[in-house]
Image 1 (cartoon, rainbow, N blue to C red):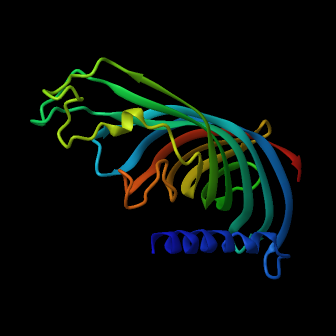
Image 2 (image 1 turned 90 degrees about the vertical axis):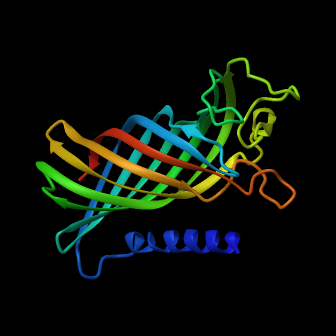
Image 3 (image 1 turned 30 degrees about the vertical axis):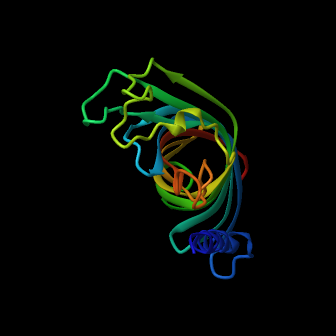
Length: 241
């Protein structure tokens, strides 16, 4: 059932992009192309079930951006935005013992991704000089090409295992099992257009529809998906107006 829901959500997101590729019937056509780069910060958690108590895992993101504006429909500027990003995701545990008391133990998993968001964008405001507000949304795919771990010595219980409130420590020895990641991202921002180019400030949220670990009935986790808050700045220049 969950896999069917995932496929339906992705299908709806992809279909929402189709109007951007069609010839405008009502709106004023545009043929603007911008390219540039972005940089920012990811704040990530893994949605584990059974639960693992976590703090935000912070890491950088940066990449290339291409934007194709196709039309002005009433007061909205419609565009398709493609990106190729590097992103550092993972999780950082907030470790307690079996009595739910804080421990000095630390554990952080760093997962390095290449990501490809495909975004529909609607903007309102000044087209040539001044401020615009915008929203954007669409599917995103990614691939984890590397992972690293940082940790302290663990406090052990009487059985010689890490002392944890729910006995969950199997994740420490588990490398990522599903390197391919996919989900939905959406956000909003402001754009300042000047003679020097376009300057954008933006916030997004990414919800992973895939899991980093196997999730069958015999596996430890039934869910282990990424959930990411993203803050970024972008600079674009016009190559076709």
